[in-house]
Length: 287
Image 1 (cartoon, rainbow, N blue to C red):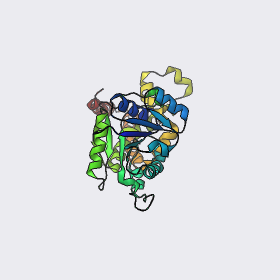
Image 2 (cartoon, rainbow, N blue to C red; image 1 turned 90 degrees about the vertical axis):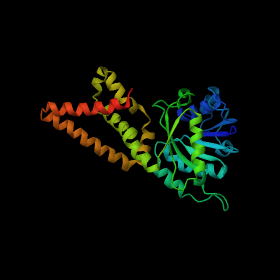
Image 3 (cartoon, rainbow, N blue to C red; image 1 turned 30 degrees about the vertical axis):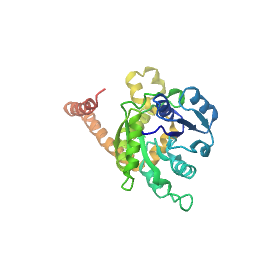
Image 4 (tube, rainbow, N blue to C red; image 1 turned 60 degrees about the horizontal axis):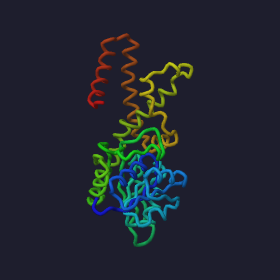
């Protein structure tokens, strides 16, 4: 980024707080303002060094901002972009949401807030940091959360090249590696690599008889860890990316049927082949 910008972060939880910490510790912002619903949480973020100051007033928080990062649940991103574009018409706006196609489509259709002003989508580009965890809140934020992690940026055909480059530089300055995908490509990929795993973890956790929970080991814990995430947040994600998640679920069901057939038929070679294929794919990712 050229001159240190003024940055407003709407939603100073794990992701928003980590972005704020990284900006402040790296000296990449003149000021980082946190915008949220509760002053107690914002004050905690300030004490932890994630923001310079906090406010529950969005208009006040984004005033004079050069960048606005929206790190809220996905079902509030479109309305937040609308409000930010009206209050800070020159700011570059991006988000950290786990879904993109519906959000970008709705933002593209938003009209100008006033005659003569640009439409809200003019200065918006979607982003999705592939970082975080099931623990939320600024107390879990880390300045190095994005270091060597992927951030997916989702330009569209009409997105100005300068906006793409600025956004890429923003995330790279925080230590991340940026990959460009269309919003639709993003949602298809994340359905397979993020959303379906969460659904499967949730199904496995809920299918475990409670009287046997004391017998669970590291394998069960590792596999179901992400099921501890917010049910409200994940309901929104599954709903917004419903078609792609269903496609991924059908592929999983097909593979599960292969295991079922091998076990039901006592076909040891087929079972071994299924396990070998799973190991090959998992080993390709590394630790």
